[in-house]
Length: 539
Image 1 (cartoon, one colour):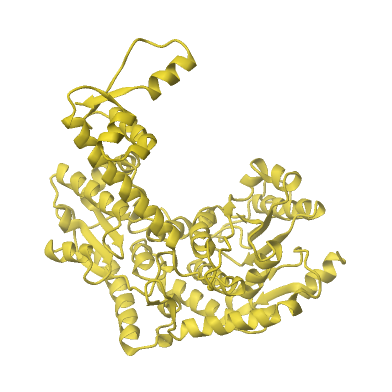
Image 2: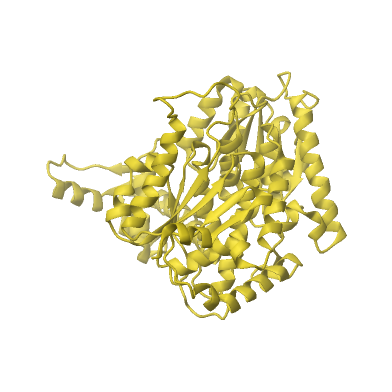
C-alpha cells in the first residue's frame, strides 16, 4: 500500500450537503479498480434511475419500489401517489400533536404517555433503531415494542408498562394484515387491555394496506386511527413511511428533519461521479472486499451508544435484500453479505481480538461521530488533564482501525457531525441506495424475498401438522411414541418434527399433552433413550 496520507487524500469523499465523509483509503483495492468497474457502475446508475421513475422492480409481486418517493413526493410517477404521501405525512404530524395535547385521549386517562409498537422485521427494526438513536427521557411519549411472537417477551414488555397501560397507545403494523407474529402480538395486547378493564379498540392504531384484514378489523372496531402502507414500499425500506414516522413523531422526534436528511442524501447519491457518491463507494467496496460474491462479512462498528441498533437494522436491509439464491437470469448464484456488529468501544472487549488475529473473512465499517455530547452547553468535563471520555472513544476507534490495517484487515470509515434526526435520515438513505447499486452490480433482485416466504410456508406447515398431531393424540386409547403419532397424523416422515412439537407441548401447562415418564434415569445415555423413546397422551 502507498503512503496512507497520500491514499487518504486521494480517496476521501467529502459530502458537504449531508455533513458526511466516507474514507475508503484502508480498503486494499488497486488503482485500476474503479476503471474496471466503470461500465457496470454506469448500468447500476441507470437501473436505479429506472426504479425511481416507477419501473416494476419487484416482478414477483408486480410492484414498483418507491421508498425514494417517501422523502421526495415530487419524484412519484403519479399525482395520486404524490398526494397520498403528502397527506399521510401531514396526518402523522397532526395526529402526534393531537395525542401530545390530549385532543385525542385514552379511555381512562387525560392523555397518552406511552405507545406499544407491534410489528416484525422492518415494521419493528426501523422504529426500534430510531427510538434508540433519537429518543430521550423527556419525550412526550415513551416507546415499547412487541417484535417477536415470544409470549415470555411480551409478558416482560407488558410488565414494564405496568399500570401505564391505560395511557398506552398500541400501533399494529402489518402491510398484508396477515403476518402471524404481528397478529399474535395484537391478540396478546388486546387480552392485556381486557384484563385491565380497558377497551383495546380505544387505544389502537393500525398501519396497514388498504383493504387488508387488519384494515377491516380496525375499521369495524372503530380504532383510533388507520395509516396506510403502500404495496410499493417494502418492509425493510419502510422507516420513512408511516411505519417509522408515526412512532418517531409520537416521541417528539423531528420527522421533517429525518425526511430532509434522506432527501438530501438521495440527491448526493444520484451523482454519477463515483468518487463523490457515498453510496456508490460503499457498493464498490462491498464488491471489492467480497470479490462480488459476498465472500467477506460486513462488521458494522458505530462508535456511539445511540447507534447501537444500527447493525440490527442493517442486517435486514442488507441480508434480506442481497441474500438470493438466483440472479436476474435465473442462474443459481447464492449471493449475499453477512452483517454483524457491536458498538465502540464495547467491541474492544468483545471480538476485536478475532477481527485482528483470527480469520480474515470480513471488512469493517466504522461509524464515527464528531460531536461528543448532544448537549454541549455545559463546561467540558475532563477525565484527565485535557482529555475527555470522548477523546478515549476517538482514540479507541482510530487505534482499532490502525491495528486492523497493520494486520491486513480492511475497513471503511463513515464520519457524521452528530447523531440527529437529519443524520439518521442520511444514514438510512445512504445504505438503501448502496444496497440497490450493489444488487445491480452483481445482477440480483434486491426487492423480493422468496426465502422469507419459504420460511413462512414451512412454519405454516408445522402449525398444520400440530393440529393433526393433537387430533391423533385425542383419538388414541393409549400413550404413543413420536413415530407412532406421526404415522397416525399422516406424516410418517416427520417423526422428528412431531417429537419436537410433543416435547414443547408437554413442557407447558394446559397445552393438552402429557409425557408419560418411566423409571428415573441416572445417566446421560439413559436420559437420551428416555427422551427419544418417550410416550405421550392427551391430557
